[in-house]
Amino acid sequence: MHLHDALLFLAAFLASTVEMVEALTIVLAVGVTRSWRSTGWGVGAAVGALAVIVAVFGPAINRLPIDALRLIVGTILLIFGLQWLRKAILRATGLKALHDEDAIFQEEVAEAKTASHVERAGLDWYAFTVAFKGVFLEGLEVAFIVVTFGGTQRNVPLAAAAAGAALVLVLAVGAVVHAPLSRVPENTLKFGVGVMLTSFGIFWAGEGAGADWPHGDLSLLGVLAFVVVASFGLVAAFRGGRATVPAGEVAA
Amino acid sequence: MRWIVGFGRFWYDFIVGDDWMVAVVVAIAVGVTYALAHADVTAWWLLPVAVFAVLAVSVARAAAKVRGR
Image (spheres, each protein chain N blue to C red):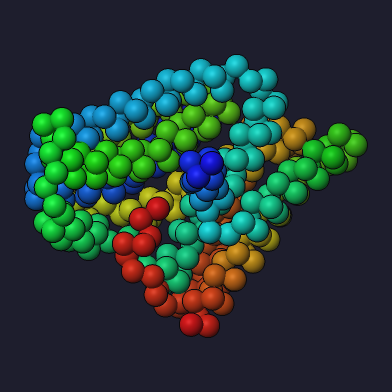
């Protein structure tokens, strides 16, 4: 496996893990308080919809000329990755509240207990829609990463396999633990994913724009090191902030 | 019409997020890199520099906003 493929797998796996941990919290909350059957249908429908998105856009993106693909998709990946990295730096400095799965679980349980019961198609509609939206919206970021990240390297199947492995892992651990996976170092993982998306975005967007990287593909390691040092430098410079945003508002 | 606006807003929030300046600076930096590279000028350094600069300014703006509350 080449360096780029290994980093692609790692980034898709880590991104998928954090997003699925967040989705699991919502799924557990509605499953425990409402109906596991309706929740299960919601999860299944969302995973199916996400699989369709990857199956449709994955091959479509592969048909684009490689330079145009890297220029356009690399730029979008860079903007998207910087959003992750910016939030991760703000959390690490204390300027934004850390993601707290236990607190979010309690909020979701409280909402699920007070929501009225409406039955549609034989399902508890609240449980179905909340589970569907939770898994679909969290999974959409994963699908986006799989299609763009995988597409720029002409290896969407590898990225999809990494995301699938993370989904299976989180589902298996969730089924055993039966509680929010609050011990997963989500904030650290998000920092790592932000660094990788930004580094790959810089590399591919630069290459797509026609820039010649010194030492070719090996330059990616230099870009990665630069982004890591720059990110930690910004954390050190701005550390000591105070988080004023409630945990529930930093779900992304 | 409302559906189209909502769809566009969703994708804007999804990709651009909280600070539009980041997206604008990245787009300009990629454009300038393209222009320099096609004029046979060494351009690989521009994107890392632009990314660091815009990230630093964006974090500083967010810090000022939070600390000013």
